[in-house]
Amino acid sequence: MALLLRNVRCIVSCDKHDNVYEKVDIFCKDGRIAAIGKDLDVAAERVINCTEYLCYPGLVNTHHHFYQIFSRNLPKAQGLKLFDWLTYLYDIWKNLDPEAINLSSKCALALLMKSGCTTAFDHHYVFPGESSLDLLDAQFAAAEELGARMVASRGSMNLSKKDGGLPPDSVVQTTEKILSDSQAAVEKFHDPSFGSMRQLALAPCSPFSASHELYRETAKLARSLGVRLHTHLCETKDEEYYTTTAFKMRPLEYMQSLDFVGEDVWFAHGIWFNDDELNVLRDTGAAITHCPASNMKLASGAARIPDMLELGIPVSLGVDGSASNDGSNLLEEMRLGYLLSRVTYGNRAPDAYEWLKMATLGGARTLGRDDIGSVEVGKCADLFLVDKRRLDIVGAAYSPKTMLAAVGLSGSVDYTIIGGEVTVEDGHLKKADEQELFEKSHLKIKEYLGVE
Image 1 (tube, rainbow, N blue to C red):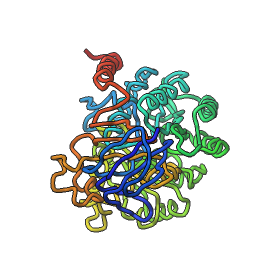
Image 2 (tube, helix red, strand yellow):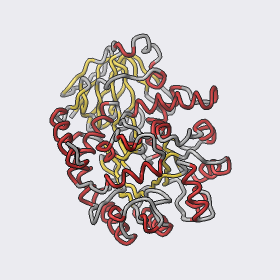
Image 3 (cartoon, rainbow, N blue to C red):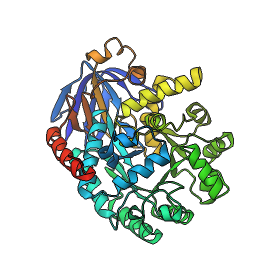
Image 4 (cartoon, helix red, strand yellow):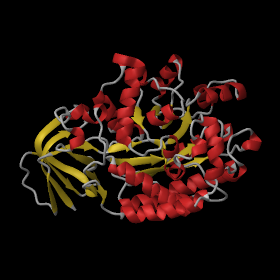
């Protein structure tokens, strides 16, 4: 299908030259951006008049836990720090099944897409019983139905309470089972081609729920299969205490000992790195996903984003689990990240445009992709549009590059386009009935949580 965006008022490209275009057309064909220019003489099945619209690259979310959207705002989980929070919620998450995964993934993806996100990574690591490929099937089916570009993970945990970990026995698996399923998942789901709509990473959960053997063998397997590696790291001081007590090493040093560091690795959070560890990240090329809302809600701390960027460490943004954030909105993460950094670092904080770059090109770099993250000819036609006449941005659209992080949006974007297809129009999903999705999800949540 060919799509023409006619006379776009302003395009913030986020390309390496930071180009901003005014009053130009964007021609999308076969899923890619085929041309950008004035008065393009092309034929398209659909033409959208964009005279009053601002255009941005699709946002790239590099850390989430979709299933947690069904356990948001639970009273007993409020006010807890990470370890106590996890201990409480694992007893709920052990009830996950393919239907809960499919519906929660649809809800999370829908909210992301309505906030301009076009590519999302989900760190799923809870596989009750023998489940594995069926849960990943349910996730990719949800993404395909909505038209989202998705990177999933075959996450893993093999340390339960009896082993000194946090999860209950019912949600951990043996190392052998995990590695076997991981290979099968990569072979079934991972598509490394340009413009891929589905990719897979291997992702042990955390140092306090995955053994050293699992980390080491997962790294070997991932590299033999050509996929990326991900885990939580340096999120809290409790984690630091755990690794220094159990392994006599700080968290990053522990990862180094397991060969779980490198250009093919990205870590979620990365709050408590010291100066020497930031230099290790720089030298090895490992990336960081910053999750400001979650870090604030769980009182984990504020990541050293200015220092990371000065060193050239790849930094992207993640929503993190909806239960630790209570939202699924990457635009909100940009603004919260901008504000948290300002209050923490003052004038050393990245400016508002840098936060947009982290959420777009930074996300693409973190996921190892060069086909998304900016509005450029030849890249995937992933972008979103905002009507500059909206009341929530009145007076703010004179500076489109900084508007989203400095001011934000109070509602959905107007259009989200993924692979040249309109997936959100006038703020609503194009490929799913939102009310029907709510009703099905509401019934499943009642069953899942055991509430009336």
